Length: 249
Image 1 (tube, rainbow, N blue to C red):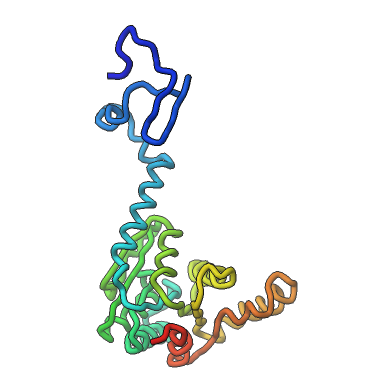
Image 2 (image 1 turned 135 degrees about the vertical axis):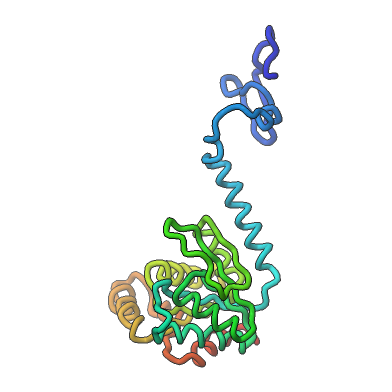
């Protein structure tokens, strides 16, 4: 197909919502390019194609999680050992959240995430894992009952916030800190409301809290009231009470 022999190239071309004129007019039609089996596959790496994949991830996530009961997201390190006190705390928190009437959402990986999912499953609650595609593949832990794997961190983080009423943050590394500060920023800027954040493990989080108070707030980079955006505790019952108190349950 394309332009028949002897005909001139049109000066204006409409391709759906896109208008092309003069030298930007393309030969052929959209259907022709779709059905043409020749050519390379570089188009699957273009930004417009990525937009479609991003859109599909949102659709899959929303579809899988839309009917979840009230839920709490639990974060923590994938490197937490199964025989550690932190792992046992994660199991107890997952169990206690289910007993309080909540589903449990984690990143779906091993360590602290697995612990919270395990506690939720043992309590016969809804155990959710939102995984992420990484070079070092972890896979979803065996205690996840509803699992969704994502390519893009920002889509995954949207799901953590959209389908949870609060966060419990166990000791963790850079990924955990990323999720924590994302949540703190959303609450501080009022992008989300009524969203309690609990840091579990006073000794672990002490250095961070001291730095926020003595450097960030003292240096005028945040206000004193920003330190009220989160709570710190070592008590499982207190953590659950703090993270669920504003949900009305």
